[in-house]
Length: 270
Image (spheres, helix red, strand yellow):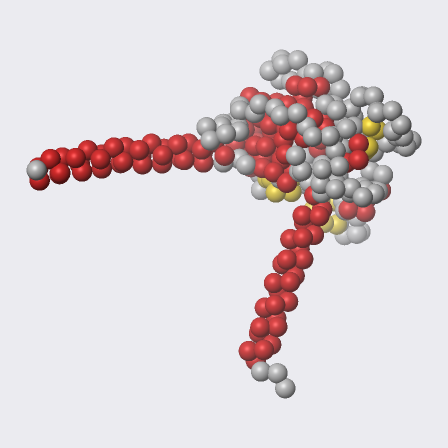
């Protein structure tokens, strides 16, 4: 007969194993998959300059706003952002009325009616930017057996980070290396896992219209939507950087004051 303490320790061990298993599963889910695919089974992306990188980094909010336009008009057709609410979009600089109107322009599931048929309702500020598909099975069936990943944290969990996202979005249309066979229904992209992907090129020259009149080249759309994905993944990054700089300045002032006080004290002693 087991003691209560043994049962508690056993349950605790199972919980630890479960947590580790979930963590491992989450890590594996974001790695490229395929025949023998590894985390770096793609061409290393060129380094890009991003305003939000570095200790003094900050987001170009005009680029973030344009990036949301790309997400809303292109990416949201397949990808959701379940960790983001419509209310979070107020951080783009939108007024509450504009956010409410934006949310209400989308409809989300609202259960079933008396006859058992699915019904929807206008979204509100507390609702999340969900996947356009009702479940993973439908999503996979519509995308060659692959469920489009949620983009809430894509910029921080995607192998290669923002540089690879940008390189991938602009990497279509290149000529495959000699001897490379691209199966029908797939596209060559050196920044995709194994250099091949079933997703067609999502961005086209002039494919969208920016409200601020910025020319919508593929490169511009890719840079803007990558900036938006980085902002969504770390919306408080600029505030953290400002707080860090303020703390460093405070500590430097305190250090100078301490040195001056020490010198004055020792000069009085002598």
